[in-house]
Image (cartoon, rainbow, N blue to C red; front, side):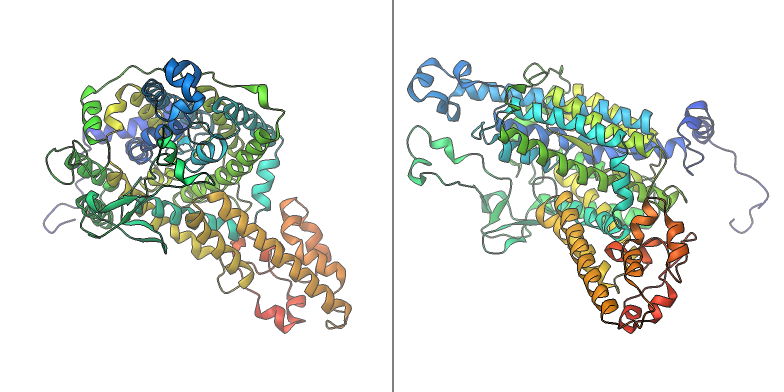
Length: 624
């Protein structure tokens, strides 16, 4: 209280605060457990809006990527008869009629993306009550397009056949979730890998936000070092193309000149680094977000996004997102599309396009299995990371086994979303890592994901508006959230090499491989390698008599497999048969020193630790 003011006088609540309290305590608020999760209705609504603005970039990006497949457009029917008679299906590379079909297909993909994301996120809100956004997965959509189907269907799997593979994959996802296999795997994965996954997702998000396609363009392509400092103006950029093992003379000559394919959004700067107005506008936006967050201003991320968006919509300056002066291609078309304001959604060229006729071929099953393990690791790891973010504000939300309320429903939603997406003509959907933006803004319940679902629903009709939010407006938000997620790395016992090395590889490879799944695969593989080495090492010491009979092969087995004994509910066996084992009593299991993968849920057996100086040196005490 300020000096001279009556400290006993309570300031009356405004009408908005009164409504907030009534809404928080209403039946809807009780259903979503808003008060129980230390939140309010207004806080959830604001978080949902911020989350949607952070993920809505997927609307134009996903449609842009998937449209490169050519979709359901058939050269035999869409190309001009004369061109098809001359070169056959190769007419798709240059025929104007075929290109019009692809453009219509791209517009339908915008509606499909919005509808699939809306339905899936709505299910997440009502069924799982988690503040998570569900949308087509970045990275997986690129794999779907360029590795499975190919540019304009140049691979051996067609767009329709790939959708059928995604459809089957979704039901496999549902099966392993209902049977409990997926939840049990979450318990079996070492906690150090889970925590490093959260930090790795933060690095991945920051890397996305630093690039040109979905961010501020500060990092760009270099032919010698792969990445380098960017931020150059449009006239200093050289786009990158990828060429396969084909006749190079035929790429740029003859009727098939478009065989060169589409230009990558990545580019090389010939000069003028750090002179791009859009990059500096993105940097200023990030500074505003950090400054407002530093001063505890609610909605700081939202204010930053709106600030940058409104400036980018002003024409006739170098940081505009419209007209010919835009440094992003298509500025003139984007402006005319934005002026429409509203459109009627259509899925005529994307909905119900599944072709199950090729499910007997090896190419389709390779694609299906790849989709499955990528989605499984990506979605499961992201879910755990997001649940941990909620747990930071809601104590006890995630228990010692890594479980959270309605975990089964959360995972089922993911499988249902994949099936819905395939029926609407899009690549697999997953929980978006950008959900962390909304959680950081205060989202803790399904109310915020309900707002995201409403945002995607409105976007079906207002897609020209939301598709015009520039990437350098949302990029700073993604970078900021990525930096905040790095705090999860503090739960890894970095002084224990058995945790440090796998955790570091997990964090490092997520941004460098542009995949959460590949980072987790590498981390788990290194955990297994170190576990095998540790088992062999300890077995040799026991057999050679280095422990003088104080440690037996049975003790080695229990010690190295302790993590799995705990996960499968047999911790009492460790208490009874492993000397010195103490069960975990509310301590952070990620700080334990042994077990498979370098950790288990209990404390390191004292008697066994003292019997080997080497073992005691690598031991780490649990931390509350």
